Length: 195
Image 1: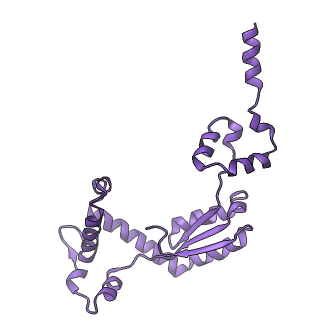
Image 2: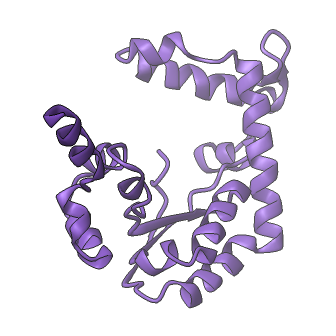
Image 3: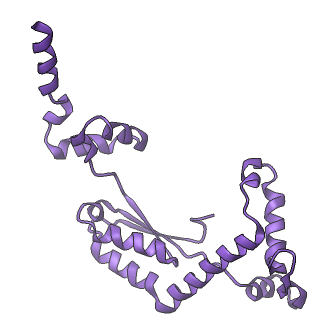
């Protein structure tokens, strides 16, 4: 009987943290590392609904990044937390741009398709250079995609970037974000956010 009362009493008791107002819980949770917040969310349904802490949002000339940026800007809670926009202005380039900068005369051989790999020679050369740099990271080398698949993926990203730049969707999204993030304090423009 006593054990039955004890177990039923335990089942009806809510965690002590939930006795605080939601604003105070959010404030307390904001000081925790993300790993601990994730663990806390798993403890009960109420804590599982704690809004994740987002202070920065990322933007680039990539349609998926723009889609996520706008989703955050349109979210009633997330948009209130954003204090920084990180705008990656790095651009994927096609071969002539790379070789014009590095060499005064473009070697036509570099622009031709490597029949063994199924992608341009300049792309093969760049990948080989990257492979050399990655030898210290054996696990990454083991997971490397074939060059033909890399080229296909690179081409898709390049085409997506071209579409975004032509439509100015990244610029329009940035201006939209300026209106939607009331706590925005900083905009960081960098060519190095993804690499």
